[in-house]
Amino acid sequence: MRWCEAGSGAVARMAIALLLAAMVLAAAVPGRAAAQGLSNLDYEYLSFRGVMLDGGKIFPSKVDPTWTIGGRIDLGFLAPGVRVAVGLNHWSSTLVRKEVGALETRVDELILEQTGQTTNVSLGEITWADTAIHADVHMMWRVPFGLLTYAGMGWSGHVLRGSGPAIDGTFVEDLLDSVRAGLNVHAGVEFPIDRRFRLVSEARYEVLEDLTYLQLRAGGQFTFGALAPGEEP
Image (cartoon, rainbow, N blue to C red):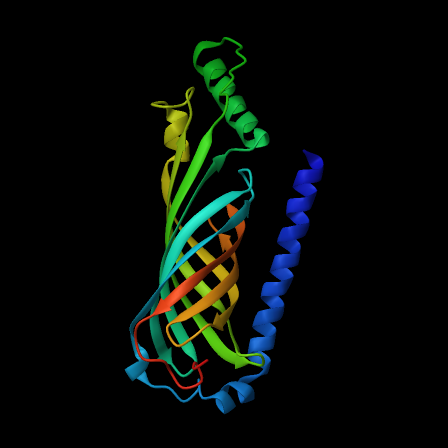
């Protein structure tokens, strides 16, 4: 298991570095953005413009890496070069053995405190699932080769639910069931195939109260509204 954990850590560090590099690059090239027209926008471009469906993979701190499904609604430009989007994301995975062991220790200590008896509780396999709604704001630029890039941050609300044969209906399930707020940084690349469809790839790092994860995702966006200057393929 150690090589898996090391591999996930290396992927996380690499993706975080890419996110930071993309955001630094974005901040360093405002002149290019102006030249391409995305900085000459107004509130007329703030409206429902498109829908993206995506899939990907997350590398969390407390559960095994797993696949994700989700989507995004493009709400257009709030200010020159500043795009707004809202989205939904879902994943479900198995709690890592270290976290299960910590829960088992807590149960053993509680039983000892209340009854004076020593136990060796086994909670078995525990599943943790997350359904999240996020609102993102990011700067967007056009770069060579017909690509659009963006980098920014967002806020999210997470509904987390735990389950497992040994914990269903117990206080352990209650510990895992919660609603939490989160923050993220993200960066992505979009390749317009034509005026109404573009391929999207994105990396984001999400931070909750006691859970963090790197997410890599890709999908396709259908655009219905008017394109802003500089977005044309």
